Image (cartoon, rainbow, N blue to C red; front, side):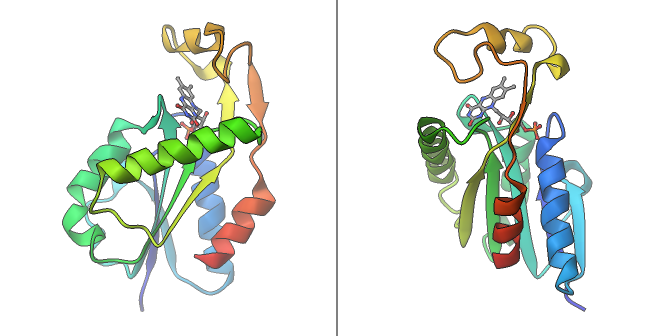
Length: 166
Ligand SMILES: Cc1cc2nc3c(=O)[nH]c(=O)nc-3n(C[C@H](O)[C@H](O)[C@H](O)COP(=O)(O)O)c2cc1C
């Protein structure tokens, strides 16, 4: 039987949660799905469909996410892929537009990577999980993270709707 893969790169767990939700929506409609982190995936060859989720950090996806794309390029370029990124910590229009631009830049860097679907979702920010000096991000005036301690406005309805479409 054909199988789908939902693969994620997540530093603090919020992208992992979303990947698990996407996988469960796909299972509910009868698909066989593995939900795995980028480090757990040796090859994507056996999968007929791939959903890849990553978070935005300083305008890019994380190093493990980039390494995954580089490692799997040959096969990923041949498979149907849907891509989501987490980033903005609210639905604020400017934040969403900035994240869309960041997503576009990521896709420009990986010019062979042509997901049929690429989507930005609101992420989660939890200052208590960040080690110094990364925690200083909450003190950087003029950034969306300034003064934030905990914010989780992930839109589970939007995630469910998107998952139903991939
Ligand atoms: C140090 C740091 C830098 C971030 N940079 C960005 C960014 O450039 N663009 C963005 O949209 N979100 C940014 N975010 C928000 C994260 O993408 C968001 O918190 C995401 O949900 C984290 O995913 P994870 O829990 O799977 O690691 C940043 C968060 C941190 C902690």
